[in-house]
Image (tube, rainbow, N blue to C red):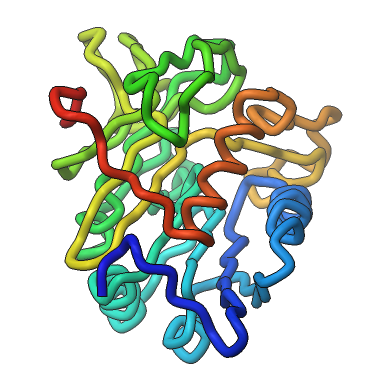
Length: 271
């Protein structure tokens, strides 16, 4: 089965699995926004989970959407995710889906570690999170202006988490940014160059494909209590309030639901 095929259920129904949960983010907000967007497709039927205990649902899914942070599939679930993509499934992975993060040890240095505990999933996703600099506005640039997922989108500024990740190429990069400097508070993620860092990319595995979009940070006032912060006093909506993010996210969901071609023109940037 080619990844350009739409795998539809009875009567043309499209089965979607949404995994939305983890730590340090406002998953209620992200879940609500994603379900609103998915509701624009009348054929889509979405099942919602907080973790990767999705074996039965994944067997019939056409599209997997994940918005997670430090939500680690166990070894059996890792194999299920790999098989889903390789058999022709599409996976829209958002923001922290590529993260495994150990918080600071009580009494020790206040730094986060990013252990390599995603197994083969990191290869399928095309990256694993290492760290990010403090949240501040940065410029997202369009790598492939003629690609359907980003056509007509101009470079835009966003105050979001800028991901420094360990990459597993080949990646078909559609949006990128540049960054050089420390990822304060993380053991890894310091950078000393201005090489482009993927913000949106495609990664093929077997007959299927992953679309990874690193933007989409959101945090409510009460989402850091396990780190000793009872009330942040503010809400952070990151890219969700940026029109370009909403436009591209809608196209990514359309890619996942309808199987639009993702073939890149010859000579475009890839890593």
